[in-house]
Every structure is written in C-alpha cells, then in structure tokens.
Length: 47
Image 1 (tube, helix red, strand yellow):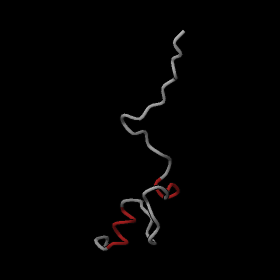
Image 2 (spheres, rainbow, N blue to C red):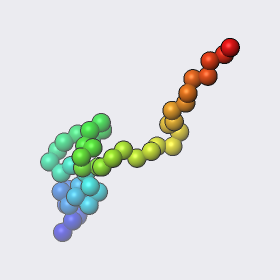
Image 3 (cartoon, helix red, strand yellow):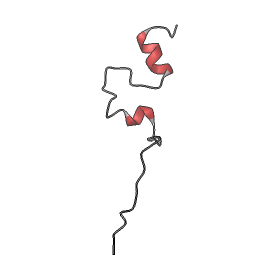
C-alpha cells in the first residue's frame, strides 16, 4: 500500500527518512531542473 507517508515519499522520489528537502536532497531528486524566469544575463557595459 503506497498511501502511507513512506509510500508517498517513494512515489514522489523524495527522501523517506526525514531529511530536509528545501535546499538539499539533490541525490534523491536528481539534477536541478530549469525554472522559468531564472536566466543568466551577460552584463552590457555602456561605452
């Protein structure tokens, strides 16, 4: 049965044993996904 807490964590590919997920958990989540609105711009110097 996957309707308990641990089953849901497994199904969503999140840490199961109480680790924080706000900033870490990259091993379980995998590589970072691109987020809309965040981009790297080159600074244009005025000359």
